[in-house]
Length: 384
Image (tube, helix red, strand yellow):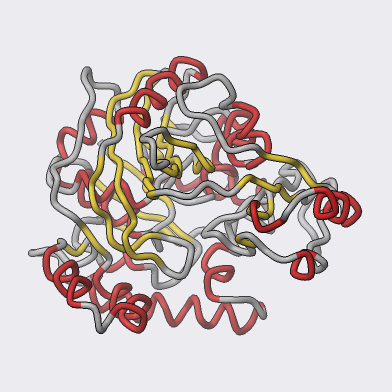
């Protein structure tokens, strides 16, 4: 069997490549970058460089369909936000595609619509308000203490542009529109948990939860401590039953002091939680394809070791606990027998830096600019 795993820049893609290779599959990885980290892994047989999906979604789907046919691909698995483009054009792909329906993905990706969707479930979102104009922001700020709220774009990732308990003055720069709304969400204090799960026809088949003790700023976690709060697992079971979801899905939660939880947002795609299954490759592939039971991870912490040194050591380097944590966790990039991705992080990072310079944006924005989806129409012709 032959699998094509998209999003080769992501450590999650690297993990899935190793998982499928260990399970006996032929593995091709794909991306629009020249030097993504997974390209240098001994787990893959081939690398497929694709066009950027965001500028021309239809052209990207056509290119992907041609390659799927030419290479005899049996299964296509996305890991990043190309998931939205793949879901939208999935009927044109002559292979099994593991993504949920596009409209459901949209509802989960939009932070305001997601908060509405989870009302009545075991875990609900904090109070959330949609803001679709500068005037609506001003009205909200005039009637609420903004220090009790978090403001962020309805379509965003990595906590990009999030304003945590801002002043009224800080909010003056927020100018949402109907097409690009923001939300105000009541601040919830507590311990952070992130979940990563596989569901097949609404049935939970794999579930991991972890505390991201160290992050890149306020964004992506880079050190993963396994946890398992009961309300979160109950939420996933109910979520699957309510939606009939098939594919990868991840949620961010806050556990309050009384043990109850609030769900903050959803990522209907792969996240770092997949690394917690790194020692169960056969079982993880089986779970993706619908095996009975619920696969859970072993308790050892994992980390992106180089990212810890680049993005966390300046803040925590004088703390002995940081170094104990760094030494205790398995690196998700470097593995015995597959050391190529470790040095490959450098050219991959340099390519992203180059995109940041040429596109005049920040590093995190450059890492997703070619594939992120922010609610824009995928049926419109490409811009010149």
